Image 1 (tube, helix red, strand yellow):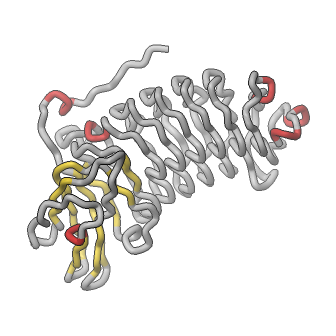
Image 2 (cartoon, rainbow, N blue to C red; image 1 turned 60 degrees about the vertical axis):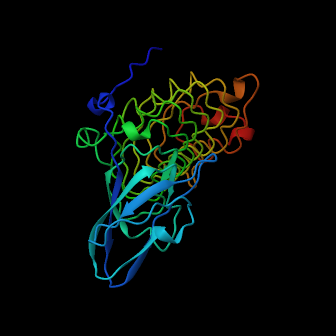
Length: 302
């Protein structure tokens, strides 16, 4: 199965772009802590511009540096700019900052390996590569390894189809888009370039308005080991995937586990229980009574 890598114009310029995001404060003297994290032995080597006219931070060389903390004296909307080496940025549902982040301005080219906006309920969109074509596009995601919780519990309503085209080395998509109440569809070809991915566990868990996914969504992801909880409690999802090319998977537990029989899933369940060796499939099709072969699914998979 041939994959044509899609490249963005800035890839040949060699220009360095910072990482930028937007916050909105509603009260005076709001404290914001940039969620820097180390990754695989890499530590940040960055300066931060706070967007309020206060200038830049000193060079930050530790993810726990006090220089990553800033107080905004007046309420308003600010663009925070991070330049340098930024191996990791992880909101991770931090209650003190998750509601303040309201936009991604650009991903930049800062050496990101892991990135998540988990819990940012006021984040409603991901900028398209076209809108960022003069600002590094998605080129800065070319060293990404982990998209775990990337957009978990945000309110994005759509996913750019080329979101991961620059991330061929990414392996982890656990909880990537989980618990999103606004996402209705998934674009075709979304994961075509991440052929080394090993887990999509809970990737779309609890996406309550998701109605359909492309039948070929994971066809190129032949190295996946876990789809556990992939579409669990996606109660409005109408179609079931066959996972034809995902023969290395060892864990399908809860892949389509529904909390109630009042779900929209139809079609024919893939006969995962006939694979050799048999993958783990606990509650894989629980309450999926609308499947045409539900009566013949072994109890170990229901």
